[in-house]
Image 1 (cartoon, one colour):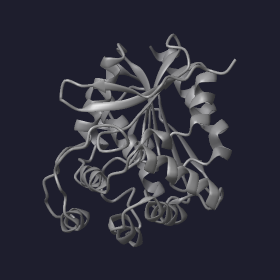
Image 2 (cartoon, helix red, strand yellow):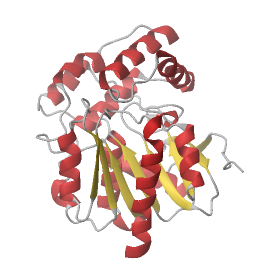
Image 3 (tube, rainbow, N blue to C red):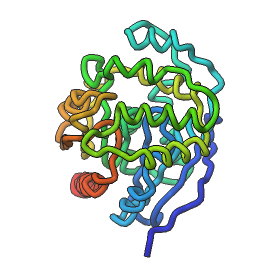
Image 4 (cartoon, one colour):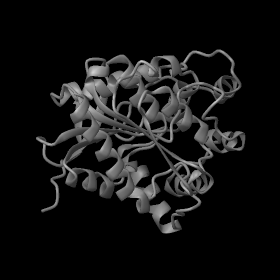
Length: 302
């Protein structure tokens, strides 16, 4: 029998932010919070992967971060010149921070009546997941950080050639979004597991239908560029941790994953040849096995 899948629901948080979320599996299962990355709505957590995790015994929760999908938009404009200044190390003020996004995630857990959860984050979502573990360790049963980094500027860097594409403007409408989305994924996706044009188009169309915000991406990007270096605080964690990183990641260099695993005591590091800055379906089974293995460690240590 396939796992149950909820409708898309809204969680009003005390901060005034409203998060859109969806669940997979039995609420009595092990709670697993999936945190997506920069500009990524919850549908970037592939439904098949969510079902596989639910079949492995997890109660899976995926959601739109603020400024993505059907969650709240923050009405503050960020200029491209501000992004460039932050990228080059200049001091800027961001509308919100990675710790603010971590607070959103805890707010969603509170809304669901969950005291703690296993937390899996991708890219910016990995930064959010790490921050959750640092700030409220008791509420993070296990941590999986995928293609992410510690916030230290000398590791996990972005290939400079990507910046013009990431902050470049695009015309309005679906076709312009599909064109620009396919261009980005061709640049940062997994060379060992290429996606077809049809797959990229379907993903872009679904994302566009749920709502896209270029200004929201800029605000999230500024949160990433102004994040603190978490290295020292990560060393104090005593949470079962898995770090997954692709050896062909142009968006977040593999040094970010290596540094994350080196900082967290007892962390497992899984490096995957041919994987870039996406999660290819061919690797779903490997992800599920590794996440389950890490969650099982929490049963032993707690």
